[in-house]
Length: 595
Image (cartoon, rainbow, N blue to C red):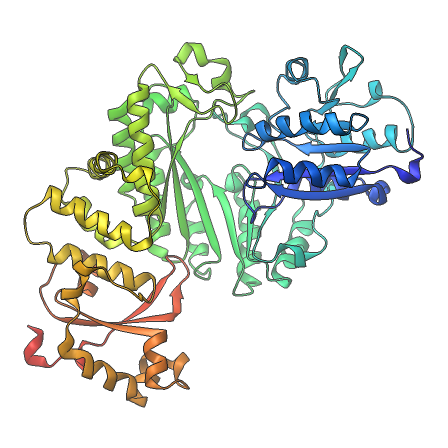
């Protein structure tokens, strides 16, 4: 072993995306403050090549290489460390994280290149490990919460301690490295619920970080104007007092920029809480709400406490506030839910009109209740991470493939937010939202579009193709709404041929005169007063529609009336990320032409 002043411990994260950051490894580095000079942190993504990461780690010449393991990176990490051991056989390799915290001994029996696995919470355990290797105090048998290899023998030590949340230091130092990245933060560990698909169900009770610490840390995020803080608390609002303390602090100290994301249980929200949230800045908060299924038998099988009727009521009340982005989740492949039942769950959640509807697929995670009950429920899943469901007793693999394609259509045409009015109109022509997306998915498969990459405009083209294939009636309303969606999202530089008939040349002069009128510019485009008419036309857009698209937005009714709409891209709505709209019909279209 090297002398202690030459010891190098490399903490390594392989994140899912560039915008992600590793909270776990920063905790380790900050908690082990005695060994700061020996600890180094490197982050990569799963999109980096294996050769690149391997060479970068090798050139670091670590004595101990530590890797944080999750379902999205474990296969890459195993391959990487196998190759790393070949080029650096004396380096000790330590794994930690949820992917290796369950059945750890079995994992090490099958994977010989890892020397130590940290089981469960790592801060205190890792610090003890550093005492052994850097200070050379004690031996591995005295380190709680590890499985370690000694020759051909594996040893399992006593369970590691549950951390006092106030003993964990704030993990972030230099905020400049987090520009345009998501910062992860936690104020609790554990969950009061027992959902059988989730690893949080394995830990009983909830531990809280003191609010005096939390508010000071929140202020650091606000002072440094970070882009987004994503709370990793499993059910953030399981304590009303805790949640309200934080929400009130953020509302009272809002910097007008930072967004805070919370995973909440909507049915726990009460009237007082919703009334308080009414005062939050649009875009300050973002809620992720797990519905998972509305099938009561399925909810019972997975031991989930959720009253969908109450949840629906609360989601609708949050929607009515018009200031909080809501992201609702469904999971396909849960026990007790067949294809038709999942379609009903989809329709139930779609009816709540969330900003995002996440259609996910069950991951049978090691340590979860469903992992141990997989035979009971007939769950067949991939052997390798992320252990995604292939089929169940109720849903065949053929049906699962159909749901995969439906998921893709929901992502492209609903969750993207780029087609929301066109899709809303299209869905109204089918028996149900699920039926619409099901047939759209079948169309994409038949046309082979799922094999190709598509431009932004191509998605509009294909939606029009689908409409014409299904319906022979007049497409003017549908095309108007798609054109509206296009401009609502961005200043379009190019239009598809099928959109051109909607460009009404008779009003081009009126539009130019609108931009040249200083009083109208002051009234409708105050942020652009210093620009000339030509510059204004690049920053905003006026479009004339043969239907009243603004009335459609308000009540979903179609009125055949010429309407001029101004799209102001300087004042996008932070909830839906769309342009500010103004009705400028009176300034563009003559009264006699409007009817």
